Length: 191
Image 1: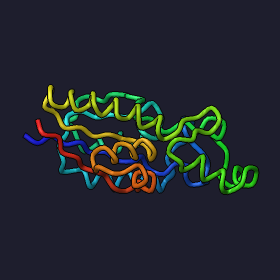
Image 2: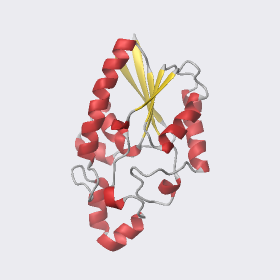
Image 3: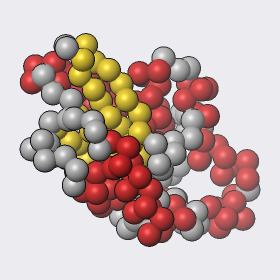
């Protein structure tokens, strides 16, 4: 029996649109973000899953609500912050252009896209990967035990290690990923 993990990135938020470091800050979906999530919902309409996962951030739960409108078979939603967005620490809420102006483009790129460098008070992708892999391990055990397929409303940076795991990517390939707002990924788990 094939079990499926359907994972997607939440829709665009006001912070995403204005190019601010969001991290663990709540930022609502823009009208475009609602349309993007509605497109995901339409693409997932004919898929079946019994369990849903979201994080405690509103953009994850708001996106999942849109998707679940078409899925009365999904009876349970679980909040798990091991797949929450990367914390940007002191950079959270700051505009990208402000950080570039103050610290330079090179330092911005290091904080924004390096694997093992954390901004002050924040997380590196390496730290995010550790918690996401813990989530994946427990998720697969749960899916096999309960014989369920799942949908996950995730974040751009928590999807990187998720995709690395299931797509067998290198660290470099993972760091080059751009996770679109209007596409879902489907991974099969053998029961």
